[in-house]
Length: 462
Image (cartoon, rainbow, N blue to C red; front, side, top):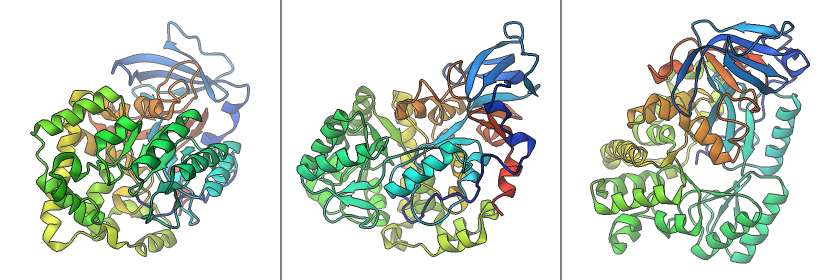
């Protein structure tokens, strides 16, 4: 989890961007917005239909159909999308928010990320941030959050977690967070099995799923059997695949040592891996690989992130702040760097295997950060890494739209361009199924019926 970085107290205020036409309040009033002559991508089927019309009234999609089926209201504001593609707004399912330092979350919106899911953070700041975004005081993506992560003893992040070391504390903590309005519960490395079991039972009673890391004391299979529904990162413990005495020597090492050592020993062709993947499919869990943070930690390294041109869109003070955040947990010893690079490729291969088997994959970054983790830019990089791992462009887009909405329990409101859903969508200048990079060629962003342009959102960051 990228708690090296703080998240999100946005720099932009007001319901729109300085009165510019593309951020007007028209669409949220009685005047409808019509997108005409578009090629609409159905992320559920992959079908691309030309000459489509999308009618938006307020913050909802009212009608969708061909120009022969849908008449554009005379009073509508019309956006001509000739030779352009319409897709749902994108979702970053692992984007940290709710710490005290300011991060420009307008960058998420500038890159077409209309929703983020924050697995961790200060509950009060998260609540305030969501209220400000929802009220229009801040321009940013829709925000879903867990609040503080729940960890055992000793907690890995003492200042960013709740210490939950008994089943009784597990029950009271989950109920407290539910009362505070969280959308799910996040667990971390040192949770014990009895505690995890009580967390899951209590969360289910409160209508919440449990997401997070696989606790280091148990297997992924056991955590899934207990009821975890969203697995963050690809954190397979040694005890899942290795003899227990060998696993004990590795499983509790710091991340930068543990993962290279484990993946050096893992055999993807083994029956154990085939059985694990089959179990993930049968259990209908969601797997959030966060390949972007793994690549940053195990392949690119801090210098490459500092020198990445994406950083040019960040405020200078924020870049300096990010560079000051280091943690020995992530350090990869020189003798393990080659193993770390090979291990990352093996994790990508594992994701390809999961995808082919039918595991539900969602797209998250574990940002924000520098370089490939810059807000918004990181999500597009994650889509690229998913395609490199064997997903088709359609499957990668689905991981950031419809499947992501399903993991949030919001697929009746988000994730596709259909009547009755919230009007979150992108107008693209090129076909994203031809090349996933085209998902970043954004002409117009629409969130809740309001229009934004990338250039205007970026101009308010500098």
